[in-house]
Image (cartoon, rainbow, N blue to C red):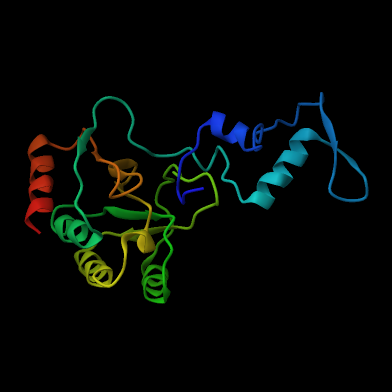
Length: 204
């Protein structure tokens, strides 16, 4: 299964992981638990299976995201280096960078652990399996420049599969499957600011 792929119910059913959101009130089907032959309700067994498979929950896949017809779709840059250089000086003060499902080496890992902060808002996970690691990092000019320098030596999937930017309770940029899908920009941003961002992508 491709890393970071978002899967529909039909695919899940086809691969034997349907009904993973069983409810405690479901007493119609009861299955034998993993130990001592104890009979457990089906919802308990499915929860146990979810933990073993490291599947994300509905709650984890709920959260801030761009929704509704107002957002704009733009063609993103080709690399994280171009992205971070374009965002430096464009993002508002207090913006947070969100990274999901990367495969970091020691250099990236050390930087992210050193600079991460607690989530300021829960961003809806874009990954069902396996449960991804996420990092929330303040979008300071120093951070953006350092990340651009680091990514000169790394491939994009090492840092993140999904990349977003938020501020307070608002997602500013949403980029699932970064570099293979269009980037979404919040409709609340002025049109000229969006044009400026696209221009920055082309000039860096």
